[in-house]
Length: 302
Image 1: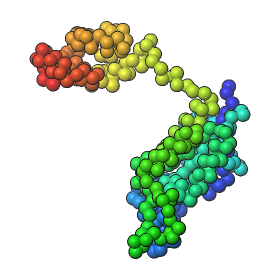
Image 2: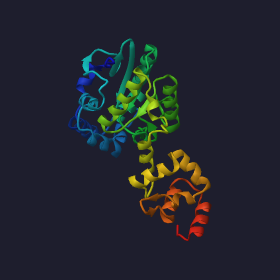
Image 3: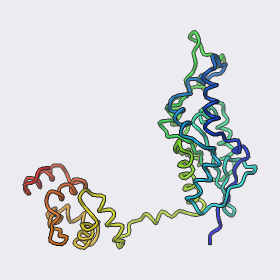
Image 4: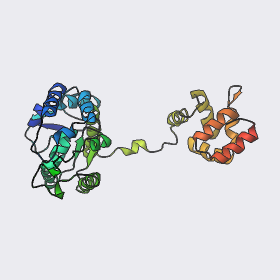
């Protein structure tokens, strides 16, 4: 039996807030009239952020605990001192994970705290990632805006190095990937986010199992399931088609040359027929011109 992956959760994460705490913080921020800061925090509190916080019902450690129900390769998490938010260990191997809400992502990026965390990651020599609890479009939507007062920046020592735009954002993400600490944009739902993160961690530390997704020509059940995804093909028809053509791959090759073969497939006393065949051939990628020719030849409307 394989050893389980150990999880050390940073002591700081014990203070991960619930949705009610976050909404109260947002309300307080929105009530502020003047903030002496290079970034207008009120601009950062967008509808997408509010939506994110409404969807988050629990603290992060609890979300991790619930997500672990789908991953039996991990031991129960413990709190401790670690240089990451979440540290995963298997034997002599370590995988570090930093997690950020959208608001925290922008705040730490602007203040430089994010950069310090990434440098620590890189210096450790361990693989890792930064998990952002929000999609890439939501993160861009939460991009901070510089504040002007009377045509001037509030922050007197402002220079171009403080600006953030989409080009700089893409460049920053590229640098992270190039430094072997990729940024993964996950979901506002923390359980979904941890499911993705745990999947990456276990296949990094245990080794890839991508072979499970390689083609299996002899696996008739999987081939039948693939056929059933097409319009009009039931389990009975998929069985008849595999018997007729031998495999899904052979079926595609033959139909590209002789489409009539599909219409002639029989299940019991019934043939698949021209009308259903045209629908399947369209979904299989047959060209519009060829489909029109077949429809005319078979006397069926597209």
